Length: 318
Image 1 (tube, rainbow, N blue to C red):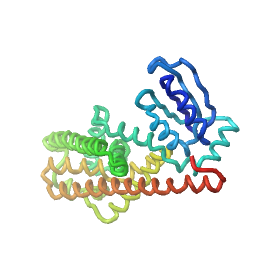
Image 2 (cartoon, rainbow, N blue to C red):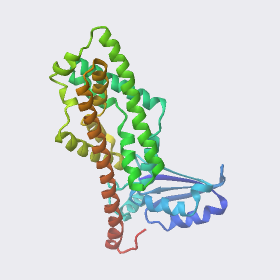
Image 3 (spheres, rainbow, N blue to C red):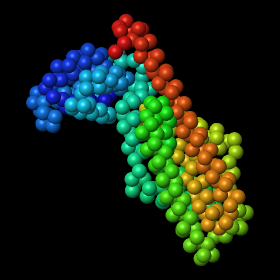
Image 4 (cartoon, one colour):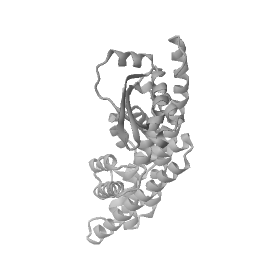
């Protein structure tokens, strides 16, 4: 269940009410006349079954509510209402399967923003990966995987392709490139210092690793895992069940490969630079392609679920 709050000029209140009253996925409808100061007008609140949220949002957008007012959707973690339960039963499909495209798109833009926090996490994660390579420590490899924030913009690339949003695609690609460039650059500089201190050598990086050598050895399984992880990650994001993201983060060799590139470059192990770069490319492309394909399948399946369930219940689709 989602909580809907609409702030709208008084002239649009009745059209908004008409949309919400006619939507079978809506319940708990209320109007606060004159409660909105910016924009000056009314506040309309309602509960919307997640399965029917897209149709409601699209109808409000067609009215131009987003241009003259505001529309806010927030998840409701706990609710008690027989009428709301009936609204969920009437809505097409299952709530866990429903993709609220407005929410997903908003999150994609947030995750694709190039900011100080994102760059900081990328640098710190790559530094940990660099230490993991130098020390041949598998635990640190896992830690770097979990800390890396790169999956957000990777998923945004797939969404941008599905929705044909060139601006979002550009933002996501820029953030990915800048993040990995910053992480590799800082880790390379740190590795040069470590080499000067005698903490790491080319021999250790190329021949002394038994636990972390897979980071710089891509194979067909690298692509398989990247595709599976990309699909699982997108499903976690679109369904709101983010528990699965931890498994995604510790499955793909992106940040560890970046750390390997930096350390190998610092000690002159150029063969590992290219092989770790290939590992990074395979994982990034595999996850982005899998995310795109998963979103396409979800969009196609959901477009068929809505009218089919509506027909089964003897009513026209919302």
